[in-house]
Length: 248
Image (cartoon, rainbow, N blue to C red; front, side, top):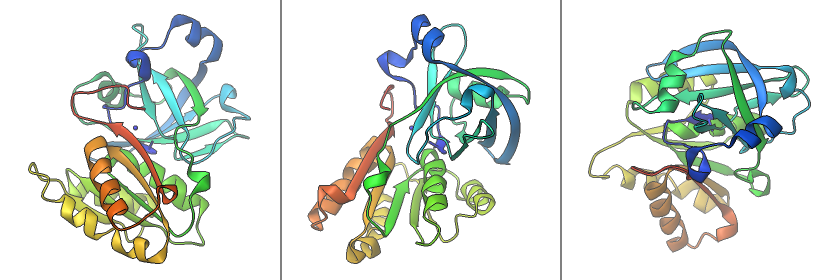
């Protein structure tokens, strides 16, 4: 819920399982070509395979990776896609003890996996500039993809995170300069800082890409509507919500 940063909360739909028929007809086989442990909980993973060649990808697209014999899948947001080389990268965020976190922590170079996609998840092509991306650890990969395709127009980024130090290391590695990090608080008092960060893009008439935690998205979207921002300028995709699966 890219990426793309993705947490273990982003389980596949219906309900978090892929059928054998779907696996046989549409899944692509890929191998883990490289792994970089960027910071605590974050792994930058490169997947490569002939089946990934020629794929049509755009920032905001998603892939679903099968998690073993029970056909449980987890959703990830690719950071980029090299259709000629047949490779893509994801920024995985391992948080919790679910199948996605276990898969991410246990990955080794040379491991193989089955994936479905890329396919549409969030239509970022209709966003007007300037662009602002708001989210959490699961949103950093998407922010990278958006920033990489709009290098001439600096993008404002703001993320609510569990560990500011680790997230700072990730942003430095990816070259996402000037991003704002807000430490999460159990009472959600930190959300007022996220709301304050909306102001410059509201004044500039830009668009907002809100991803990550469902309740945070709802609050920020409501704040933007109060500020008179049209729905056409607000793109949203909930990647996860506490206790729920299959949001993306």
